[in-house]
Image 1 (cartoon, rainbow, N blue to C red):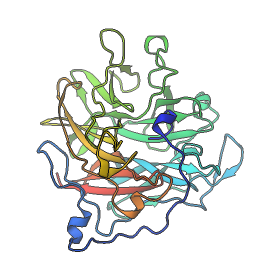
Image 2: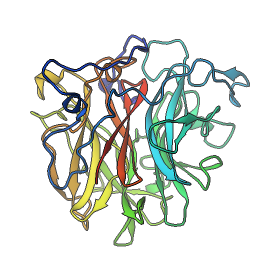
Image 3: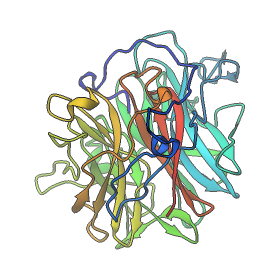
Image 4: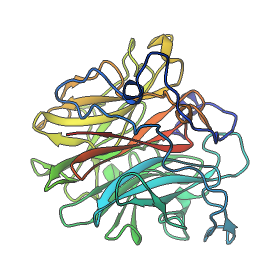
Length: 384
C-alpha cells in the first residue's frame, strides 16, 4: 500500500500500540460488534466476521534476528511492524506470508527495510512464526531493485502443477516495481524480476507498478490459478486497477487500449468510500457469477464519505465478467471491511487501515487476512 508517489502517502508519527482490546458499544451485542458487513450482494464473498474478542494474529517482534546478506550484519528483522499478508494452504496448514519491517529509526512510512516472514496454522486460530524471513533482498540479480527498501506486500497463488507464484513489490527507494518469484516449498525461491520488464522493450520497466493479484478458482476445495480462454489474468495497481495477461504465470503483458495506453478497469468514485484510490487486494476468485475482486479503497472525505475521514483505507468488492475480465458488472456501494477496532487504527498509519491481501479456503471456510494500520495482521472469516 505504501511507497507510491508522495501525493498518495503522508508522514506519520511512529507508535506501535500494544493494547489491542475490543469493547462493545452500549446496546450492541458481541455478534454485531464482530460483524464486518451487513448488506451483501448475492455475488459477493462473505459476509466476513472477525473472531470474537479479535486481536492481531501477528505483531512485531523485537527479539528475532537474522543475518542479513546485504549489510553483513545481524538485524532485528521484524522490529518495526508486521502487516500486509498473503495466504495459501499447503500440507493441511494455512501459510501466512507477511511483510516484516526492520526499524530504521525514521518517521517516514516506507523508510524501513521490508522482508517477508512466514506464519503457519493448523486450525486457523494459533499461528507459529518462522525464526527468519523466507524471502528478502539478497546479493542476486534483483538487488538493484530491492535494496534498501526491501521486498513488500506479497500476494500468492498456487498453479495446477503445485508451483507457488508470489507477486510482491520491489522497493529500492526510487521506483516501486511489481515483481514475481516461484517456489515449490515456500522456502526456496526463484526470483524472476519485474513482471513487465520485457514488455515492449521495457516500456513500463521504470514506471511505478505494484499490487499484483492473479485470478484463482476453487478446485477440489482449494484455490488455484485460473485460466480464462487460454490466459491467466492479473488485476494490479494503484490508484486505479489495471489488468495484465500471461500464458505461463511468469511473463506478463499489461492490457492496453488502442492507443497503447494502460486501460484501467476499476477507478475511484467520487461520493463513495473509494473516492481517493483503489488498489488490488488478494487473488480474485472466479465464481459462477463472474470474477470477484476484493480490493482496497482509500477515502477523501471532501469528495467521498465524510464520516470515514481522509486517507482511511477500507475494502470493497467488484464483480467482473468471467469471459471478459475487463468488463465490470457490479461493485459494492459500501465497504465490507473497515477500521473499527483499536489495533486497526493504531500504529504507523493512525488514520486507520484494513488492507486486504490474503484470501484462502480452509476446512470449508473463507479466511481473509489484512494489514492493520501498516503495523499488524488481522483476520476475518466467512462461510461459503
